[in-house]
Image 1: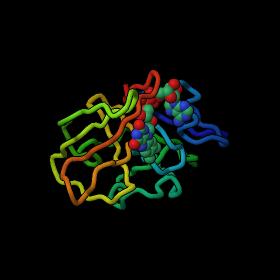
Image 2 (image 1 turned 90 degrees about the vertical axis):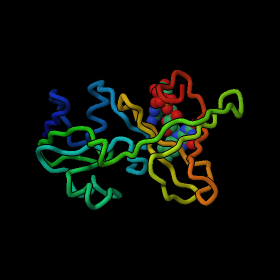
Image 3 (image 1 turned 90 degrees about the horizontal axis):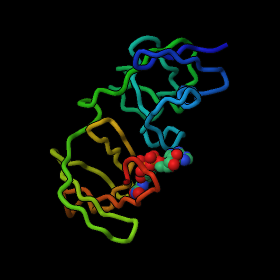
Image 4 (image 1 turned 180 degrees about the vertical axis):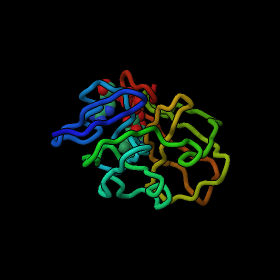
Length: 164
Ligand SMILES: Cc1cc2nc3c(=O)[nH]c(=O)nc-3n(C[C@H](O)[C@H](O)[C@H](O)COP(=O)(O)OP(=O)(O)OC[C@H]3O[C@@H](n4cnc5c(N)ncnc54)[C@H](O)[C@@H]3O)c2cc1C
């Protein structure tokens, strides 16, 4: 048996043995994802028809859960689902790049100025989303108490879409 996943106007079958993310990748759909364990939130989507199982909403903010947000990497659908990308204004804040410094041949420090202060602890990461929708996770290298700007250290991945 399989469930039908509708995404951006196309239908994809999702086998019992796979997650929604596995299914989309099997069908060759270009899709944001990284950890595949429900940690990075990079693949987060929202349902517009059908409901994702509660297990696919683990770790997501309560209001977003109510709005049908879920993680395709954890989602083994019990019913057919129609899903759309997150609403950017609900999930993301704006930031501009204010500086870039090469720290090593393949590592660049990128300094971002968020439009509103971000409260965070050492060890946390942000999800950086480009204007075209490409999103990747980066660990914060700045010190929260010292600077309102956010530093990330980006290592260039060969053929990487974001890090390049
Ligand atoms: C929590 C978290 C924190 C991170 N922090 C940092 C950080 O501080 N600094 C940093 O440089 N990076 C960090 N990353 C990695 C970062 O999110 C990107 O994955 C990385 O920059 C590469 O993205 P890209 O778009 O350049 O490469 P992509 O275009 O995504 O991929 C480049 C190559 O890798 C392959 N690839 C992509 N994803 C996978 C996968 N899941 N498994 C196997 N192969 C794959 C592609 O096929 C391609 O050949 C972090 C990731 C996570 C999950």
